[in-house]
Length: 443
Ligand SMILES: [Ca+2]
Image (cartoon, rainbow, N blue to C red; front, side):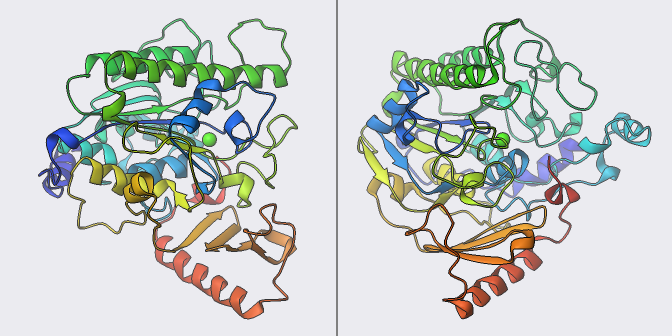
């Protein structure tokens, strides 16, 4: 069944490159997990050492207004599909594998039943079809059942974990059955080591192995997602010390990956991006959002405004700061354009190609953007953001003057707020057909 679905998908994506083969860059996309806007030196943090990530900002482009979804899975769905996660296709129980259905009946894995539909055209499939070698190193989190394995979605290679997180040392999942969740391709196989370091090793191996062909390497790092664990197995460090160490090891990982590109003479042929998938996990003092309000799971800026750095020597001017608004959905059309892959023409695409913004600092057309989660919602147009977050009623903020979202201007601009609310209502109606309950509950 999987084969026939893949066949359909591949016939719908044209593989003819629209740019010269020699101009097609490698793409390395490193995404941290739950790293907030304020935890890096280049975003103003003074307590955590992140020299390698900061160097990406010095040598490339730093965004101040890049956005993810507010949770892991929807951000990853948008990255893979170029569309709002709410619009992407998800599967119901009938499509799950027999083993998983049995476990569902026994109520063992009930919470983890959903996954992305095998009919989805992912960026991995598009790039693979355009001749790229595709690899996912790290976290998938788009379905726990084996049928959702990333190698069924266009990745040639996978090393990492299918679920939401694992113990950094044992690599067992922290939720559900708490089983070992550490894969080499389609085989579960544990390896000794600290997960961030292992994922760095695998990433370096991938670069060395495929240095002579165009590749898309998606490194979905675990850090600094819970649990708060540093390299020491029985460390007596406090959570705040471990958190700092986790980010500093993540920084080492970025340094190792960049060095692998340099050692293999690939740096000038590679677009290297570093970003995060959502804001910091449930503020606990050390995971706060700095100047922003809210964190992971919240539609306030702290939940979805996250770091984004892009480095591509010779193409992106060094030390550039970009204040334009970009979102995770933009990665699909941008990567497809750089690879010269024709976009699938049968699917609505919410993201836009931002390569001219990255390379030439050309502005992109203003658009209206939406966030929805667990009864909260937000709609953004230009500097204006309307937030509906429960009991507080509607709040209208001017982000240019009030990035902290403290001054509610709704009484000054009631008609504009009404138009934004109506716009969001229409959007929700359009995208939410078949939307699974996962978007209404924490995950
Ligand atoms: Ca996350």
